Image (tube, rainbow, N blue to C red):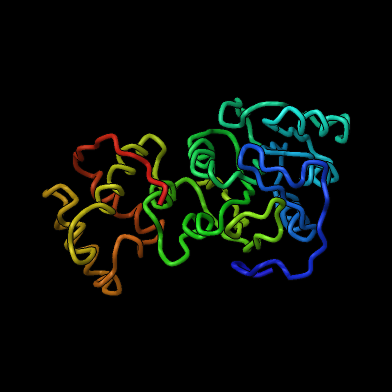
Length: 282
């Protein structure tokens, strides 16, 4: 299925014990075709699987067929109890809050149908965590588009791009959930880069730089960048822009991950005053 395309209408639905409830803001995924797409994406990854927001196992039980170590975390006591009865003995079912759950130190794949109202909190937790290698997530459609930089990168995406690749897979219609939410969902993936574009020890400096550029004043990149960087590096920035005339009328959202990394490399050749900045949701 092409990125951005909705699931086909008329897809069969899966009825689960918990379907119809809206506890903890969860909309249960009940469309078999979307579930199949979800599991297919996970099958292309390697390593143990950690699923959060497992509910009654709409994803957990199909994921068991991959034959990999599987842990399912569910906050609701009733759903966790039912899932323990349904799941294979090799599947570990944990009753707990993913936002407080201790993530494995080693490589693993994160899987989740995220409660829409907790999407930002969960993404922040994931992006700050070490160890995991890939994530397959179902989030609100507009959030998936923003994270994957459809129509231009957002501040949050640009701040994390050197270490992660964000991809939009498909649109998931509201009818694929029970209860039906007010908006569509989006299936997306996040993959940790094997070779980061910026060294991890420079993360604070890099993210402060991106924040300064995104919130800077000016009518285009030239004005914004020259005001956002130290005076000692302005000539290098101007030279960099002169070599890329297609960016003459561009804005920060138009820069690619590689370009952000290149710009940061230019300013870090000289002292750059970093400051703690908020990580945005946009």
